[in-house]
Picture (cartoon, rainbow, N blue to C red):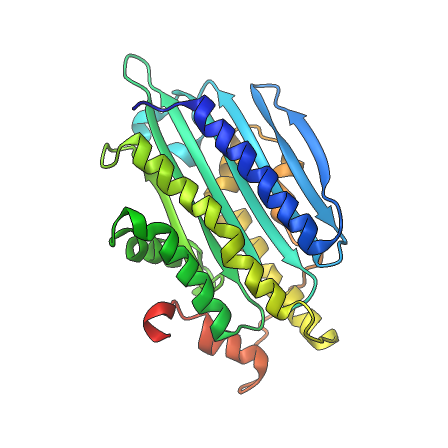
Length: 306
């Protein structure tokens, strides 16, 4: 089966609606609805909460954009598509809870179709989810990775180790030589080289999107009422700086959105509301803050160690 934009769009819009409804129940505050159009073609729907009961800032975007030439971020590894007309759609979310014991989370599922002149259209899927704790818990990391594993298991045993490793390598701040968080799964270009058919690639992508709430909600419920103070909030703000650095320097989705003339407010909704940087700061040895670096930011195999 060839790529079907109508089919994929119907799924992505339904996914956004379902996730936002669940998050509104979890938070107790309504998400703002912001519909937008892109002058070059397409548009989207941004759903956002700020200063909620649980989420200090959280957003869940749906976008469907078209263009006359693939941006550089999308063709750096596929130069043969430079200048090709394209269509891209997907759902992307980032949640920044106020409580430092509740981790930040990211999830994205997307579909691209390129139309190189004189050739058949080329489609591919991408996505994944990853967890970024500030004060980590082994139980939470294992649960999140188990949910990622189970989402991929129906499609064969090789997908999870490959996508887990891809996530560890992708969400890595090279200039800091450290992971952004405890990882999860990440994949891109799924189907572009004909290694998997459209139906299977789409089903796998749906399985990842559908697994998000089960991967994250139990963690939130376990940690949302833990007491915290200024020390924890200060460290959370410092570590959020790493999130900003990654998104603005390395994240392909952010770069694609900005380079393709996307809506800046929606693209940058992933930024946390309060962030701090310090010069050459290091946590005190043996402290709870040091444990994040020593125990969690290690790229470990959480399922093997469980």
